[in-house]
Amino acid sequence: MPQYMDVHHGMKGITADQLKEAHDADLAVEKEEGVHFVHAWADPGSGKVYCLSEAPSAEAVKRVHERAGHPADEIHQVQLSI
Amino acid sequence: MPQYMDVHHGMKGITADQLKEAHDADLAVEKEEGVHFVHAWADPGSGKVYCLSEAPSAEAVKRVHERAGHPADEIHQVQLSI
Image 1: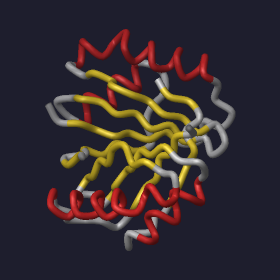
Image 2 (image 1 turned 90 degrees about the vertical axis):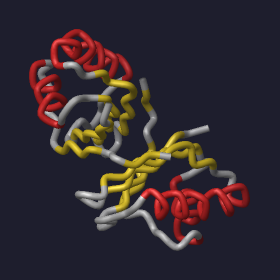
Image 3 (image 1 turned 45 degrees about the vertical axis):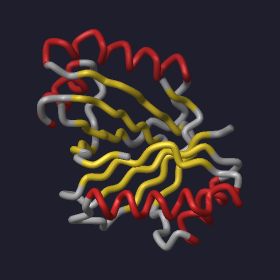
């Protein structure tokens, strides 16, 4: 399954509870799109959030984040990993 | 140990061998800076490379990537992860 890294900007001040709530919202709908969100990392200072997922397409990742209420600003297929 | 996500831009066309070579160059010097690079993901299409590390400071991450010959364009402490 291809892996994707997506990035959210402008999440300054995000808390651990808010990150968990957002991640749970993704998990609640991801199966319908054949996506699995594996990890998320957040920097409350700069407002960047990075999400690693396994998904059939970037469009599927986009749809899950949109349905969960937090559209991604960037979605990149990471064909290589180490 | 704090975690950091750093981003390299402009790595269009990066190959699996080049990613491994770059990662190995980081691993070769990271201990001297007290850093450990845990994972790296690359999108040859957009040229983005994301590196996850454990490090005492962003400056230490910066120094390892500089000494390895591939300075990072962004370094963010990811205080939250899930």
